[in-house]
Length: 55
Ligand SMILES: [Zn+2]
Image 1 (cartoon, rainbow, N blue to C red):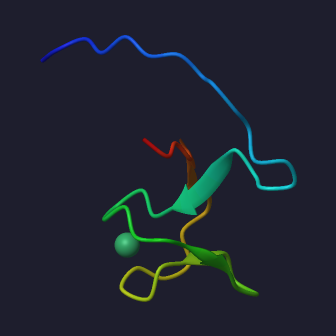
Image 2: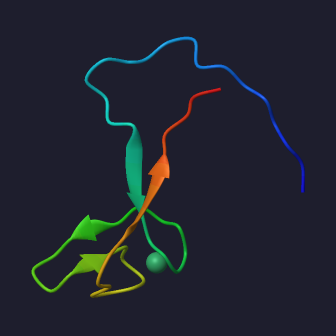
């Protein structure tokens, strides 16, 4: 494990600060009528929100 120090120097206005990922495999998820799906995992109750950081 390591620690990384960083500073936010700019924001891209209008872009969300997060993206939605699968809790099982971290692929991008989308909403379906039954819940959330990543293509491999179906009908999950809730996704995981991850920060979007461009370095
Ligand atoms: Zn998945």
